[in-house]
Length: 100
Image 1: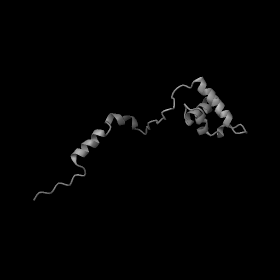
Image 2: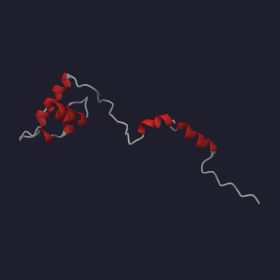
Image 3: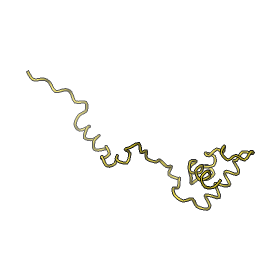
Image 4: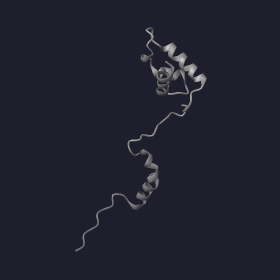
């Protein structure tokens, strides 16, 4: 007596559809070793800051800086809204690392 084959979890046509849509092994290489891809909004600029962007950042921080003059407590999301081409993280890093 011959044993019955186990039922397929997925029919072969559906399996081929899923495997065709899966990324190739080389596409996943960059995601190894806890490397997370950077997700940047479409309107965000990367790279060097222009003089106009720096001026917008300075004006935004000065207008949102609390009365005691501590720029560490600035709401960086509000600053980024005033510098539309940069993210809140970019604005914070530029201010704290280069401008203050």
